[in-house]
Length: 265
Image: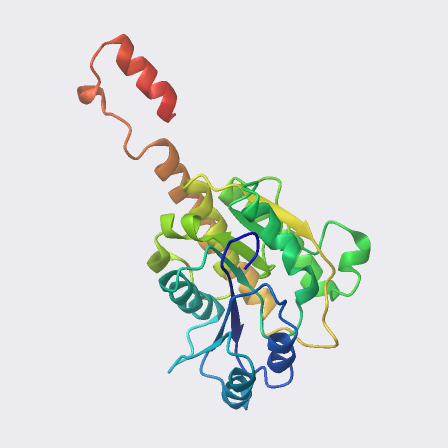
């Protein structure tokens, strides 16, 4: 536990036989449960996860029968974590690109009630982003701009960063069945978080690649994600500023009604 809060970490993994074992073995001691979600891998990922679970009783092995994408794997882990009563749920990918040693930076703001959702940011410092491949860096900067506009969180950057932590209370406010399940998961959830009024914080940390190639095809991904974000921006404005507001026929001409509109605007 961390400050009397139960900490769960979701580890989505698809064909990560080379790295997922090390991710599990280096998980900080304050983590109560490690939900390793094998998204129908076709390599030795399932075998390695099972072996690690025999050595570390914190590990919960979740094998998906069909590949659903990184978002689907994360949401599978989130559901399990909520069912087991975790207070804070982090996400750390199985590819070894997220340093377990800095996990506490993501947990502390939530435990101290300074944020509801904390995400990594590899773009804020030049030193942190120096290992990021140029095309990935360009795509990330483009999607950062689009996501700022769609989500309303103008202070956040690096929306593709999957190193995150969220309070269980905040996660329960979101309709988890309507979140994008592919690689646009991180962008889409920011929009959903804005609608429920969640406080979002960026945590700078370095990019770690070790020569790995991204599973994302950035050309088509940027185009598809931009389309999703356009729909998201319209949905967010509708949900926050129009849905549920009284129609002219419903508005009584009273001072009480004026105060009501002021609170909900």
